[in-house]
Amino acid sequence: MSGTRAVQRPGSAEALDPARLDLLLKPPRARTGWQVLPARVMAMCVVELQKLRHDRTELYTRAIQPALWLLIFGETFTRIRAIPTGGIPYIDFLAPGIIAQSAMFIAIFYGIMIIWERDAGILTKLLVTPTPRAALISGKAFASGVKALIQAVVVIVIAAALGVGLTWNPLKLLGVAVAVVLGSAFFSCLSMTIAGIVLTRDRLMGIGQAITMPLFFASNALYPVAIMPGWLQVISRINPLSYQVDALRGLLLGTPSHLLLDYGVLAFAAVVGIAAASSVLGRLAR
Amino acid sequence: MTDRATGAAGTAGDTTGAVTGGDAADAGADADAGTEAVSCRGLDYSFGDTKAVCDLDLSVRAGEVFGLLGPNGAGKTTAIRCITTLLPVPAGMVRVFGHDAAREKMAVRRLLGYVPQQLSADAQLTGRENVTLFARVFDVPRRERAERVAQALEAVDLTGAADRMAKTYSGGMVRRLELAQALVSAPRLLMLDEPTIGLDPIARTSVWEHINAVRRATGMTVLVTTHYMDEAEQYCDRVGLMNRGRIHALGTPDELRADLRERRRGAPGEPGAGGATGGPAERDDAMPTLEDVFREVAGRGLDEEGGDFRDVRNTRRTASRVG
Figure 1: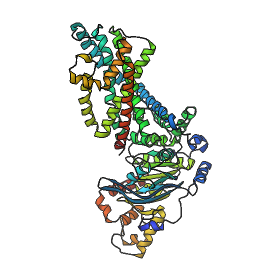
Figure 2: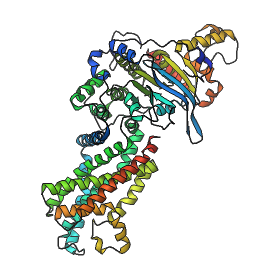
Figure 3: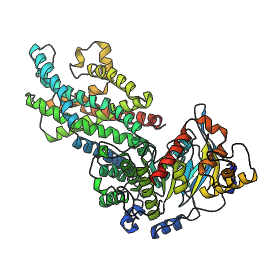
Figure 4: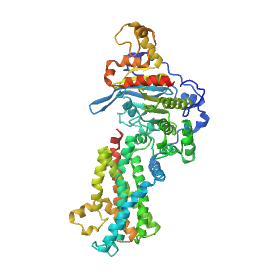
């Protein structure tokens, strides 16, 4: 240490009293086993909410596109009556698809955030904490789900304002929240997996843009699977977005759906996504 | 100790830098007495065909401030990343307080506080939120989380700025915030990768003062990499001089400098013995600097490494001027 100074400079250290640092002398008791995962998921979700609290700009700007989809595309196609919707107005049919789409659009670029965190050194520090990689990825995946959930609330409010006949049954809305979070977990993991492979923001941005619209159009978000050509129906059946939309439509509008299959596929996709993203996370750390 | 270290390494002796301070430091030092904080045995790490660390043997004693010195590309950061479990190493090569970095990663990470080279606070959070995140991921229970975070911020003199967004912090403040993030889990080993790089001289001094104050108060071991020789001379108990993936000399700064002076006296007029300092008379009698020691043990290869050491000399002058 340098010598004693007559005047204490800003930011310079005085001798620290160990009594005032008593907690910094005791390592916290480690969580083990199953407790680790929910604790890390909670930590990441809290960070996401804190960031949204500090800067809500993203919340407002991201509301524009789904509003336009519902207002322009929805209203127009409701009048055209070109798409068979099983007797419900097209804008009602479209609303769950737009909720799923806007949640996916947020999640699919989540990998950019992890590359930014890598570049900023934040990821490196998190990887040196007692957090298994799968728990870190799960935390990030569900944090993206929190973001998507807030987006879903915004879209539901817009849809309700446009007269879409949505359910307000709390249990069904809870089911909607679960479907949105699981879908976002999968798509954010897909994005983080690609991030772990391509390693740069520019490449990920290009790939993200290349896959979002095909995922959207090759799902039942805009039109029923039955009117798709055969090859597109095959893609739609392996596209998790279709199962998410099916669940949302069933819960919000009461249309026929396959909830058990939908949740099963979404949960399975999320687990596969977490495993895939965790396996390539080490590449980002190097 | 570095079994394969050459040059001045043999003179390192048993002298450990004095660990002074309060009761907490004494208690911490007692608990770790005689233990090795870090032990690397034959550590190798390559990026493709490039060998970043070659057969590195390193022992950091519990309670000391150990400086790993060297120019950019010397392998310091790679060695640090192997010790922190960021890079995969074979079992048995790296141990932290007896825990194998390959087999007991979580146990090793619980003992570490790590500050990477980049200024890496999350700009979208406040200082307090940045530290709280690390309290959460280190499982600090909710009932003591706020108080522990407050103590960590107080330890680095950021209490007043704790609720400001981190993006409004200066470089020195971000570095101190990172120190708080590392301290909140009460680590036994604080690892700092070039903690003062890019900071102005006043901020550098401030960061080091806080590192030393915390270390005196807690008794923790500190492993720091730097290419600022003046910092190493001033703040480190022992140093390892690293170049091209290997440690070339090991000991206290005084021992290394005294050893070089002795060798110069024994070989007057030896080409290159003067290093960066003055004429023949000074070369024989004046106490060399740590930079001279480094030039001596690293050899001519250092000049091919680029401008690092010109930078270091400039920094030394600046730092000396500021005091």
